[in-house]
Length: 636
Image 1: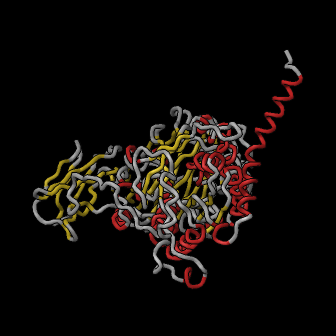
Image 2: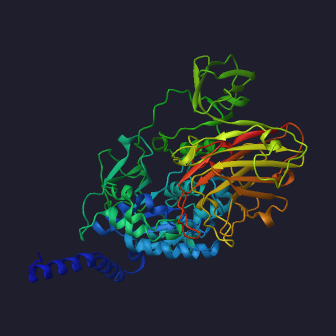
């Protein structure tokens, strides 16, 4: 039954008005700001500090609510243009990809209602989990100065940024964005820091009123929950507006996020208060509660230090020396007095399963002296090697993280231990290369299984969906690798002129760290190998390592071979040890990992990101960028 003409016309007008309401509101806001001048034109309510375009995803719905719903003026600043990322819509890479991603970002921010976007013009050089190498590549002081300039210019009331904790899976660039924003909270208010801003650029010191990390990094009782259930003036929910805006990041596979059920079901987003000039209560539901401050207060009001200091059952003077990234973070938390924001962070140390790993136990500034007593998990053992040097041995089959306790007198320390696997690589005279199939020489080598349970992202539906096994050997000059992959849908969607971004398709990544436990991959050999490009050839490229680029030009001695099998496919690689940074001597060790990428989308478009499941011999979120968590091998 058709509605009456008047009703239909009313519905049509209502729909048109609704769909055009947000742009009209934004145009009105823009017009009102255009009438302002000088410092008033630059002033914003909120500044978001991020590493790459699309990093605003975790706060996008809140931004949409604040801009479209509350009329807040918002600016974002990005450390990079994302030129080191992948590209799911074309072949652009490097600076050309940065241009594309900036265009996508500006379209996305327009939809979110973000009125200003600024860049610190730092390089997105590779995926890394290392904050240290990020700040080194970015020139820490220069980047901080650029961010302080933005804060002093825009004078935001609230700053929202990313969590700088070195948690597994947290990009080192993301850590750096949060680290720099935390430093800038103090530095922008200090006239002695970057004084040329004041002397030459007409700026004044400014302290943001509140700084938040996105997510509930602290205990839930200390994090703010921002509700997203209130419709915006056009009747849509903030998550719908955010999803449609974020879909502009097509090069990063966000094109279908508007149809994503998990995103559309989001009812709230969490923020952890880090620094403030006002008391913050756990019951707050507004990032701007108590703001703006009375005009009588100075531009740089004193910081409020009433956040609770977490209680600890450990003696701070007795501790195991952690990973360098963790030690750096602990010092950062202490210096900036933000221990409350770091409560949920769990530090750990990698230990080699079946081998003794040496750790240092400190008392104050020196190695601990005296009798050390241990409480070890079942199957684990611990002993004192020498004063303050402790040997930890994990079971050969250890996979789960455990906690070790140690006492020196009445003082207690604990350390979280993350076991990584270990293999001996047998020496061989030679192996057949071009023979396809289960050759007896290869089959004589011991096989190591990567089962579907060893997932570090996504989920395998079983061994036939995604699993594998590999064999290693060496002849003193080369490392021989064979990987047999079980995959029920082998996809080859990579063009012959697009051999990069192996995570987009079915592929295998081989990782070798000659230092056996480096903080980052920039001194490693790390290559993604497509078993078949669209012409059917096996191709590979080094990625985020010491010399990234196609294997045929950046690892000249490496040879690859692949073929299809009834269960999936097999890969072989012959890699000169010298290209890996290894010597062929017996007892030489290295970090090593095999990563399996599975997509299963048989009708994938060329270059499309079909990543669904990621497995590894030594799995952990973000493990491709953290050699400390790779397994270990020793040449026999």
